[in-house]
Image (tube, rainbow, N blue to C red; front, side, top):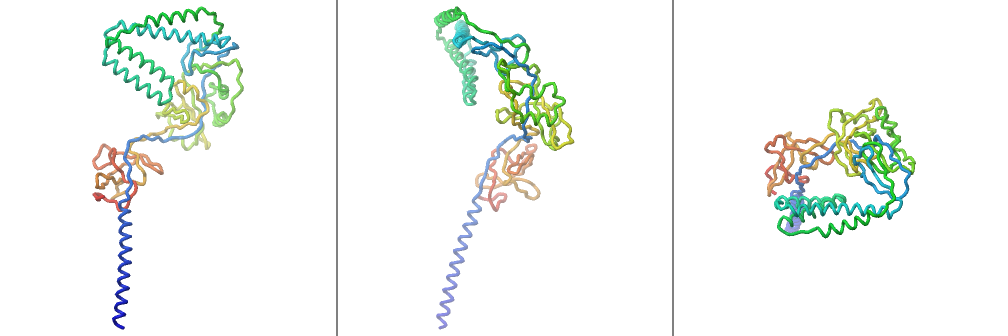
Length: 408
């Protein structure tokens, strides 16, 4: 009886031992797996912006260009281009056939000028091969960049320059290039077209300024002359307004003043980040325009919850000429440094820092936080001090039981 009891106790102890071993094995592997489950990210340089997001209304010193001519219009000036008083901005042809003939003649003139220029190169033997090669490579890269950016107008210009440079290199390496037959044929075609009587009306700009074609119906919503008296109510009403009907004789506009204005309404408590002595930039996200330099022109009274703010800009191009009611990001500050996840930041002995992985060892690197959001921080290394984070460090973002010189 006693032997049976001893055996039973021994069996129970054996089972308990197996169970303890089993659970110990599982716990060991769970802890071991947890310790080895480390996630990292590279420390990379980045610049981020602190912005105020709002809507704006663009105000320009615009005057309509009008004409009652009917027919097919051919533009001479592009949007955002500077024109003088009396310049022809477009031509209206009585028929589409006349317009096509005119455009063909202009194309032939351009081709003739092109071949005459190449003929001049053919008579000039001291072209530098190395300079030409660098020029060819640069023009090829410009073309590829333009295609990638879908800037097809610039792509066409780049590929034409590339073509001419290639011909120049052929000439420089001793190849004979004769354009006389091309020039004879082109001049004959041009003479034939010039003999036709084309019926057209020229439309000229009365004032000097930037040219913008057509109308968007907002030219008279806010007056350029009222820029100093605009209120937050005026700007908000303009942003919500609908475009006016424009007379059919309006063919374009001239913007006489070099300066144009961006009016918006922002929360008054955010105006502390906007001052007259500060360099300011505005992003137009929907148009892809970034860091447009502006200056603070005026700021309304700060007694109310919202304040009218007016910025001034003296740059103009095709993209900028299209602006009217836009979503904008007012850049008030910018921060450069290493962008890291907030989950990677730890405080050891009162010093903020991160753990990094180098080879199979873990190390602690100090940081200085210059800007932070809820998800990430921009950190740097002041004065390139030793022991701080460096470019391309593998920063630990997730993991347990982290410590300096830990073997991984």
